[in-house]
Length: 131
Image (cartoon, rainbow, N blue to C red):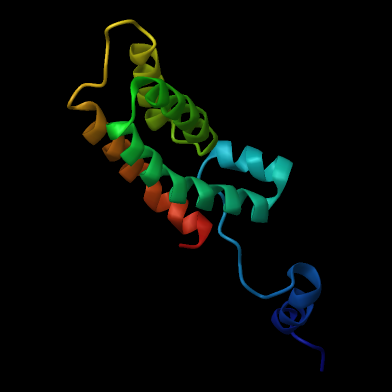
């Protein structure tokens, strides 16, 4: 009697991937592209960093001087785009454009809208990152 294919797969798992857990796929094409370049583990770590850093950047954005606000939104724009958070990235790009114009500042509705865009993408990023 031969060994079942399932048992063969279980026995091979430590040699193939180091453990038998199944990796969750990246939730969007932007992260898939990062996986292709950096690998799955590094991409998950970058997602974790984004998830950890966004709340602090968001908080600073509301209290920082204008020059720092410009730096924060520039950073958030590119990191959001890398995360596949297109709507968040577009909103931050609009803030960057506005802050780049003399006399235009953040408006009261900007921060809640920014938070809502982050909240929309965060669950899928957390799942992918294993959080």
